[in-house]
Image (cartoon, rainbow, N blue to C red; front, top):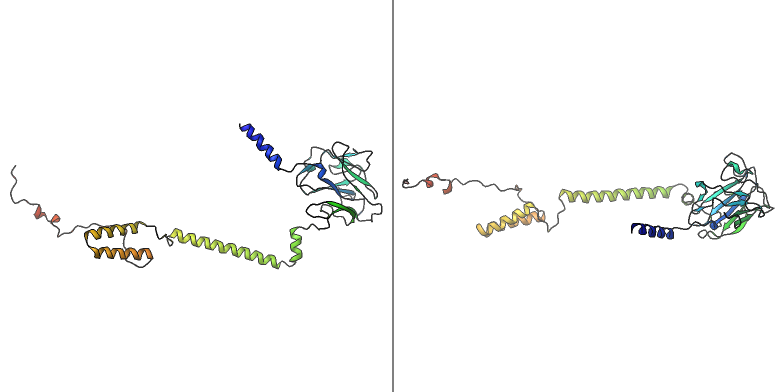
Length: 298
């Protein structure tokens, strides 16, 4: 039973999670060799291409191929067995066309020149996932970039020369971080400072109210009107006893004291216990009454 439940739960999770699909990958940008282009891990300037994951799921592109010649689709294979080949949602990976793929996972064994078309080939070695052609008249210092007309859908349907932006999403709707947006709207930080002060002040005020109310409750200042503590219960008992034994006057006095206590009025501070003291004038304490008039005969 437990095994069946685990299998069903696993299938349900797999159904909910976005599936990995290498067809969601695109070649979003490429740039030929240039002395001012991006440097690789060895500090060298080389041509590079950028691969972008347009989906909301993680895609593992290990085993896929990158080539500049469709007659040789398996020209450069992306190595397997590396966690770096797992591309998260809306993330990018940059490959350096250094003509030596032995340098690492993100290095290609060919160069990229203006007029070259680069292809991303599926791991079956035949299916073309995406391609990008660098214009022959590409100005020096610019890259060939695919731009999106919709920043949410990220449909890259325009290719044009642009300032290189390796590691950033291309699009007509400029992708800005929250920090960049705040810097533009509040360059001196006044709004951010005011908001921060208000948040702190509101938090302190809320804590003050909570501690004040809880302190009054635990200290006994706030008591429900319907609740009866030990002193109230004792006063009620005395009032009932006095009505039976001493008449209405004492019962009225105790009732008034009870009323003052419940309403928060001032009344005599009395201890919460009853002391029973013997009465010397009582016959019970007079030993003369314990003597017999006649001697008891044994």
